[in-house]
Image (cartoon, rainbow, N blue to C red; front, side, top):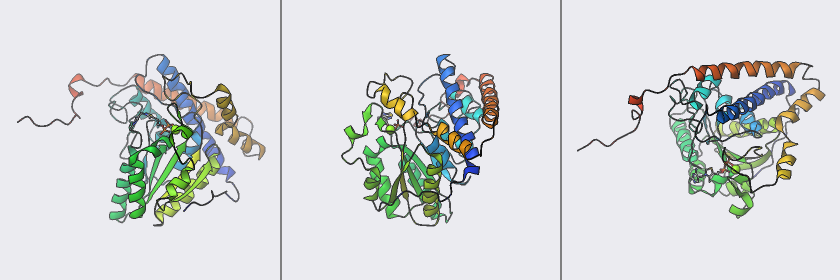
Length: 331
Ligand SMILES: Cc1ncc(C[n+]2csc(CCOP(=O)(O)OP(=O)(O)O)c2C)c(N)n1
Ligand SMILES: [Mg+2]
């Protein structure tokens, strides 16, 4: 069934300050990654989340530390919001042994089992069956944990999406499907790839409680996610939330962006989730003069420290290169 998006009766503006800080952290971390990429300190594929921060931050704010998160290759922000340190993420980006995946994964494969952050997945829709399995495990063990599964709208054209929705609903599993609809899958617009562009309706076909929310409003994102997580934790089965959002940067570091106009990008930038919250907090008197600048200084310090840590990190020894590669025993 589809239902309407919850509007918080009285938006919690006091918590808004923490959410602003967190979104700024994600934004500045990735801006630094761009600089490091240009300087060839970070190599390989890299996908930026800039513009979409309200989704990861809003949704993660409704999870408990023992809840799980599963994400995509656009996951630096989710990893930070789930509690992985900037140091361990930056070291991973540099391919260092000190990185959260021992330098084997890089940008697309951040992972931290202790914090129940199950990747980082380069395969579109690859995280969905994994999330369903994690939720099934929790249910069988009688644990009241929830699994949050983030994915792009492009994943909804994959078979794995349909199989995952079906089993999650059939077995009433505690999983929340968080669809980051940024309108494009690489260069393919949603309207060119989906017969049904009402994504909540599509999910509802599986008897999953579904609704859509403004993905540029972090308070709305938090309220929508909290509702979904509460339903799943209380045994009400899976939920699906479509976050209407937009990425301000290219799909990856190599993308001439011929599929969308500069005007469209500019229009969405006017709705920057960080500026929007800053304005809202300032107008309501929740952000004092100089408070934003203080946040910026603190965040810059954390990122400087992470970069220094990564720079000083250890290059993986050559003999470890195949250590985690499974090989069939020779006969
Ligand atoms: C199974 C599979 N098919 C194709 C690709 C190539 N690919 C990488 S990203 C991407 C677009 C996915 O778009 P979406 O799910 O909307 O996420 P977004 O990049 O917009 O966050 C595609 C097709 C892939 N990684 N995996
Ligand atoms: Mg997309």
